[in-house]
Length: 190
Image (tube, rainbow, N blue to C red):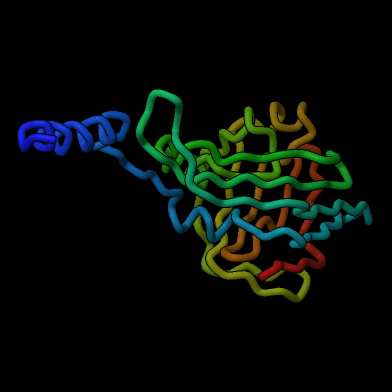
């Protein structure tokens, strides 16, 4: 092999190898604050009871957090959260955060509230309460998220207002018919 052939091979091999690689790749992460309110491990559960004694339970049956490629044509990667859960009211469901690149911070916790239908996550009114006392539990850094049209949420049997506590999850659900379901027991798997 001549020096010219060796030089040609030396130049072509990296070019060929790098031709399928992305040079300007970006990774979009879910905001840490969002994960503190909605990312819970398998085995976590919550029990809610309304003023009439009705009970609703919720349990995480599978939870996955990872990085995936955003699409076939894209080089970008996104952090992805998916949760399989079962509720005594709604049965077995699946939630996915979608792309970290498309989170809208003006929606409640970046429009990533799980435990409700993906098409109805437009809980846009939010505010933060320092502490909230419910059933002898004191919760801190509580987000209160409201759906602007309570009757619309009610038509899908969804709460129009959620209270979410940092590192605890949903601690209270309120429905348009006046039903209020505070958490009476919970376990967050670590």
